[in-house]
Image (cartoon, rainbow, N blue to C red; front, side, top):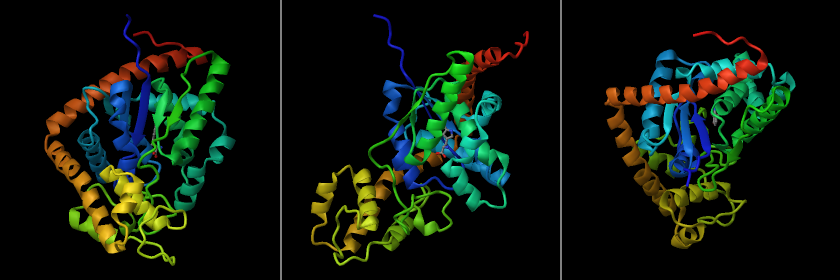
Length: 338
Ligand code: TRP
């Protein structure tokens, strides 16, 4: 029997700011099991980061930190293609072609663009508006069919589908049409200070996020300070829409410990929030500690990381170049003779 061709998965994280527990539980952690069933590409999207002001030396450090973190979290470079976006020039090249297919109106309507324009009112650059087209290019270059992302990226994946369908209709079938793979567990981890907002790595309040690099004392302190809810039902650990703070901590706790919500609620019956928060801290620390020490070990082994990145870029380039050549030909550009 012919070997079944695996479907392709693509995802990426920006090397900006501190990767949070939310990024880990909601995204990276859910990627590792996909490596068996799919042909996976995991990318550190450094070009996307440039849409907000970066300190060059910090961007370099954050990029390598994130590569090491991917591996420490279980991305296996012998199973998946792990690479840095800027190492494959086809991403920027395809983005230009897709720019001629995407409409200003649809980009102008993107929620993240509107949010970021508000947040960075002094730097509403073209890249910020163009961000989703570069993301479409990331995905379409590899003919990826499944895109594991958080809810906030669904709109961008839908735009990617629209662009792909439009291109296919105009120039004949070229791109696979991708769809989101929304994770069930660990999704939508909220801010510890405002549990109605997502835990975001760009949050200015450091107490609102748990960073993957926080040490145990810091994790415990932040969780002790996490807002709980001032309802009449105090010290009651229960998942409920009117208890967003406690519900968020329960979500973190169950995702880290593997217990069900019902089991966790039973465990803390009649116990105060103090006991509960310490248990959440223990669960988070026991998940993060092994990742942190593995990341540290990897960062000390520059030769290994370089070899992984070279191999990843080579493999990704080969696939990307195939799509890009096809696109160039279809839109009417004359192929270069090598
Ligand atoms: N925009 C994504 C985010 O901020 C990151 C990203 C860039 C991405 N390109 C991608 C995610 C392609 C999935 C597929 O989370």
